[in-house]
Length: 112
Image 1: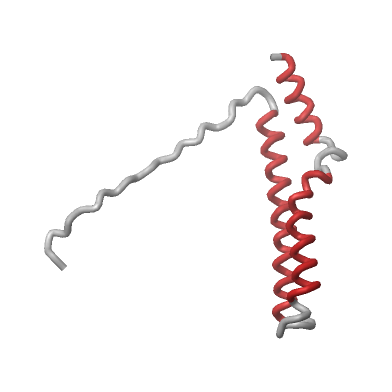
Image 2 (image 1 turned 45 degrees about the vertical axis):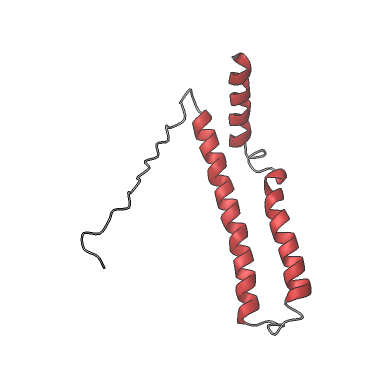
């Protein structure tokens, strides 16, 4: 069990340190989405379509890609913060409960 404690302490220190908080490898999935999208969108699709040039549609496309980047970054920061807070001390992870509601199909009282 000392290995787990040392691992938790190491992860907690890594997440809280300013230099190790955001690794470049955390952004690889974002790059894997953004780079092909930009290359295909701006390199092949938009120049050959009726929306070529700078207009409302291309600006909207750019804003959508930038919003995806910001959303990913905020989500990553929140996830790292959650990991750091869960590793702080000996807290158990919260119990997750799911309620499933099943409905039976009933015959109508009167024919429709």
